[in-house]
Image 1 (cartoon, rainbow, N blue to C red):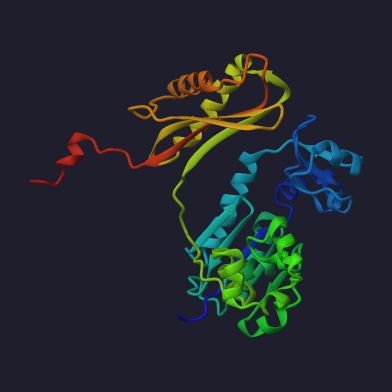
Image 2: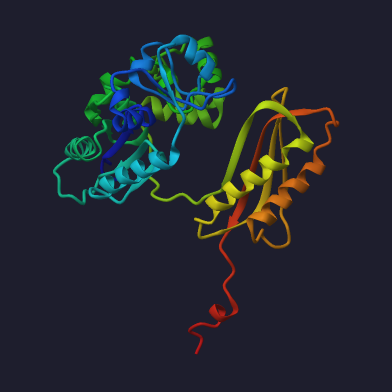
Length: 356
């Protein structure tokens, strides 16, 4: 197999950048995209806000303390999705092998280039230029022979940067990296590796495949390969939807009996999203988080899939009966989901189509 050419595109402070682009008064100012409320979290922060220590997923109240001069903007995901779709159109000019990770980032396999450009680096430069000229936004790009290295590369010169890792660069690039930069190495695994005096990829390279497998099982095999720059995971153009859900965190904790209006509202939102799927969801899911942060889920798969948003809401409401924590228990979050997607059964006429 020849060397693959993978590009990872990551839009810079995407939600906040869209807000600054669309409202000139926000340019150069610290912008935090978040709903108001004591339980809200930061969806995105402009680079001006990041200099104050604000980052995504941080509680909004803490962000306000860190950056009191920041402008808070409620998120507008419809607008962000529209911009994201335009970036995908730009990607498709160069390749159809695109794996979106979220609204603001994607992998592109440009081993074969549609646009006729001579290299993966030229594709990355062209995409960044098109995004800047057509969308008035900036994106960072990483170019590498596989996905995990391309993702590391796109972060290397953020914001508005391009970094290329060639196969011949691996011997010098990988060893100084902290092991936390490897996919799958979270805080727990990082601590376990540190206990073995393994803090860099170079130190990890000293361990044999057998020793790592003995310590960490299948993850040990993965660590051995990543430490040597090996990642055969393909760019997957389309992933089948496994579930669709909507959630809401309350301003104040609610009793279970008080959740009906929210469940009906979330059922409508989930139903609207599911209607875009070509497949049918058979299972209804009710998710609850208690005031003590305990997460509960209840599922039901009816004989026939829900046929309307009202039916979805009624099933979700009925699932509350299976939550037995006492009448005084309060909840901070509720979610309504659909799962267990399958292909729709053909109509009788379709069964016999073409049989004559």
